[in-house]
Image 1 (spheres, rainbow, N blue to C red):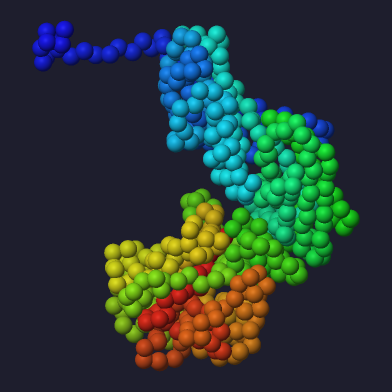
Image 2 (cartoon, rainbow, N blue to C red; image 1 turned 30 degrees about the vertical axis):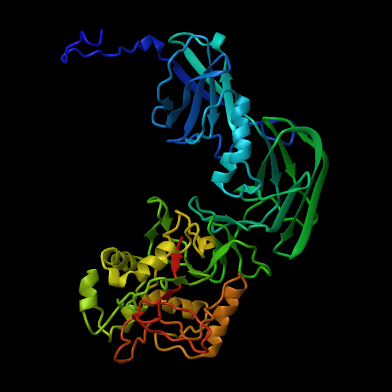
Length: 515
């Protein structure tokens, strides 16, 4: 037959559209098992978003995998799942979420559960991704319930169980306006132990913490503790003899004497407050600052920058990072050679900015365009190998696997950038307590001490490298080589100076962000 075919003869495979199944996916949340529990899981794992995927296996007689790990993708515009599943006579359809492209041949729900248990499950569930990977959902439709060209309803059910803790915390709003900024205070030193195993729960919202646990008929005990950081008081809670089956949900409301009420207190954000990546804030007068703080609020007015998400307006305040970003991994000695104002306009021409006359002190003091300057300079540094340290410092700061990954900024902020002269002056005035500071050299040790005290309370500090100083700009002076400002370094050299360019060893910068 092959020999009898000419080169012009093409065999086309025809697809019988009657074999295509009409797929629907449903998920009804965890099943509440007590009156205090809600009936539906409102978490990120079960509210499907555009681009979410499920995987489907088509298996015959529980032994032969006909189709392996077929991905169906949720389309929020149509509320449907993009992708095609065909009818196979005598075959079962097994679906799971969240999708894993590395899944091999799975012949049963039990195989999928075993894979997730060994490769995905973790007690460290303190991120949306980790929580989602622990919250495996599966569905199975037997062959006798599938017809050619018919409906395939994949009713996902949670393979694990959910324990939720509602813990009293301090909640605030900046005003009674509809667009008020709302924030809560993170718990201090929260620990949760389930059946003798320590868990790091997922903080889904203010005061609400979740743990995905393996179902078991055996009873286990719950033990937990945290610090009420407003009064610096340790609180413990416990529950004995808990049992959980698959798809089951239990919620526990923690109560204790002196706990904060359920209301929201009106309180404006203040300079000196402690900021967290999730948007929560600890008031400056609290005696304890829980772990996870990324910076200190040094201004409650901004330049109305846009957040990384392209939607959120960052008009609530500026935050000074607890740590320095570093560009010292680069071997070249020419760091970022740009100034905010200079006697050599070539630097300004390079970044497309208009020089500011040295005598125009008032315009420099009020200049809060640090983000715009940073973005212009980074654009140049992307193609200039001899001036790449600033780009390297900012792009690695807060990134996974890097030394400062704990200080990652969320996409609801601008991300970290280099402060302008006006923003540097705000730091000295507002955190250092020098209300008259106008940009000249800082030599008052008390200013350095005050800023350092604010940072140390949250686990930060001024750079201990005594070979560097805190540089900004010698505004109002005529120093020959230090006539501009862009770099902010904090160090304990005994004197804080405001300087410029960042040549030589001065490759560190203390970044800020707007939120």
